[in-house]
Amino acid sequence: MKISTEIGAAARLVGYEEAVHLVAQAGFDAWDFSLVCFRIEDFPTEAEGLTLARKLKTIGLEHGIVCNQSHAPFPSSFENLPQIKTAIRCSAEAGAPICVVHPIAFNASVEENAAFYRELLPIAHECGIKIAAENLLGWDDQREECFFASCGTTEYYKALLDAVDDPYFVACVDIGHAEQLPTGEGAPAMIRAVAHRLAALHVHDNDRKADCHQLPLTMSIDFDAVMHTLREVDYQGELTLEAVYYLKDHTAATVADGLRRMAQTARELADRFEKLGH
Image (cartoon, rainbow, N blue to C red):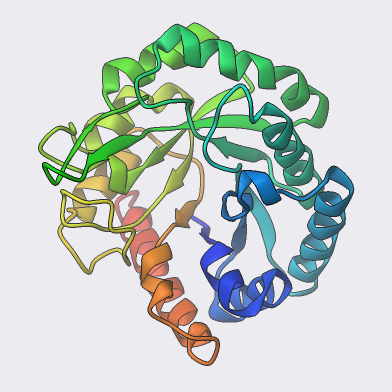
């Protein structure tokens, strides 16, 4: 199993180009093109995005790593389709085979989300890149608890994949979101529900309540159960970290150390997965 990480958190400290360089030095096999870090109103033009994608791809290849997936800007909506379509083209330019796109509004129906993703499929086919829907949960500040959102239940997630029913439409299970209890069903259940279309992961830890996006194996998620389930369904993709709040505690001077620890943790999880196959 190859290991990867999103580069947005590091890029905030050292810039995108240096972030790819440091991710390679840390020991990762690949990088996630974190276009989600750009605000919709400040999203690059297509020319600017393609230029950045080419630069980052070149830097990665010079250091022996590739772009394994990307993350489109947030929030997703029909109004923001132009920026999301640009993100898909830029992702393909960077060499990513998968672009993760959030579902639209938290309370959208399966059919509303299916219509949204169908708008993206022509570009996906044109660019040869798969669109991955990510499971979401919302957060109620007053009650301090999560609530169901688009793809937040196994039933909804599977229904959306079946409704779109296209080989270029796949699933990215966010392990942290799936484990936000009490309203969630847990990552193993989510993985099993979408195993037939599971192509990507977002991996991070939390207290099984809030969306902490912390380093795996530092909080409450049972990653042994997660790895067992991934092996059970014969997951073929990479392990991609999204521990963005872990890196927020670092500075430009310490981000390399933080990335090294992230790579070590990701490798430990990948080793656990591999041992289950013997």
